[in-house]
Structure formats: structure tokens, C-alpha cells
Amino acid sequence: MTPLGEVVVDQGYDKTFVMIPVPGYDVADVLVDGVSAGAVTAYTFTNVTENHTIHAIFERDMTFSLGRPIPDTGQTQCYDDQGNEIICPQPGQDFYDQDANHPPHRGRKRA
Image (cartoon, rainbow, N blue to C red; front, side, top):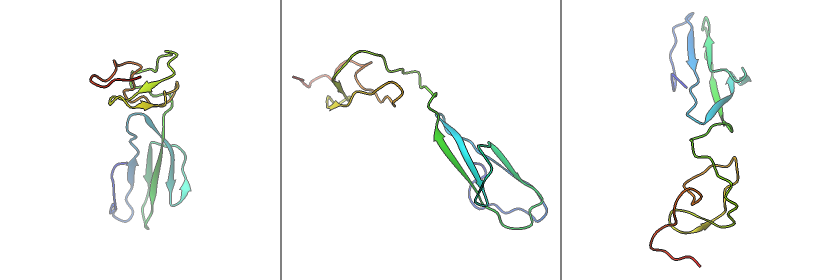
């Protein structure tokens, strides 16, 4: 959110806050003085005459892709980049360099 932190606004003036999610996330809700304003990306306090609070809640965008789709390889065993066996990711799960798209870690044998 910008601006961040405690913001001083002259009495009677307006102040706009913009919610800026990082890639892969969306605004889920914005709480203004503890009350939901919905999933808005900007909120303006108008004619400020008292203290207010604003809190943005973000959620993961399940349609976001980093361009690394998880291929359906039929694998039953997966390994991290250190050669340790891990649970194979399923479509829609985060993908952190598991061996579905990478050759096995060199220098370590697997049975």
C-alpha cells in the first residue's frame, strides 16, 4: 500500500491510499476503520477531521503463472535441486525447480 505507515493529513483535506499487490497476488479486502470496503485498489479518505485506519488484505492469485507450468509427466518420485526426494507438485501448486523440468542433481546417486 502506498503511502505506508502513519500519515499526517491536514484537517479537511483528502488522502488517497493505493493498494499495490506483488505479482501473483490480488487485493482480497480493504478494511477502513475496521469495516470492509471490498477488494478495492484505491481508497480516498475525504474531508479528514479525525484519525482513521486502513488495512489491506492480499490473497494469492490462483490464475497467476510464472511461465513454468507443471507438466503431466506421470512421475511418482520428484527431487529438489539437492537430490532430496520431495512430494511431487500437482497442477495448480507452486513450482520451485523440482526435477520435472530439470535434469537430476549431478554428483548424487539415487536408487
